[in-house]
Image (cartoon, rainbow, N blue to C red):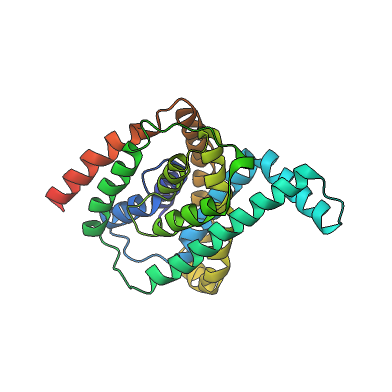
Length: 264
């Protein structure tokens, strides 16, 4: 892999991990265009770690709040706020557990990554985004219950399919559950943190293969490209969600999906 290829893949990962257009689908398309073939899974995970850092920085206030509440609960000095946050942590854990089970089930189906699969799934993602046009929120974190964890966990699990955007389907699920726009966006990325960490741990066994096929400088360049583009993408996404323009991304996915079905 060259530096240019690494930068391109990093930029695409950073942008599409947050924007609801499917990072896995875009990476698959670009790899096919570059003729890269199979790349060790850990390369994807390293890029995901870059975007994970973006999530941790952007939503650090809420993450620190949850961690402090967890500490207070463990020390048996939790107040009402801490108890509400512990309930939210429980909802997040339910979502992550369901995501893991569903993700393992889908991966065992051995569905081959192919543009022929990606393009119709782009259209499904676009339809999901269009359903958010008239979404009316009202539910804050304190209003969430375990049904939200189940619903969003299933949604995130389906995001394993290349062409189904993880952020797109989970934010849409949150909006469908009548969460406020800012809550739906933040919650979507809170439940992504354990999922990404889990993927990293599962794929660490590919570390040797990674370093033998991709040089450390190229990998570092890809990581930085994903990090920088990820900050820009998440900043833009949050602004669009709060302004009620989340569905705008469907106007990109629909023609992309149709053209892909015609020419691939």
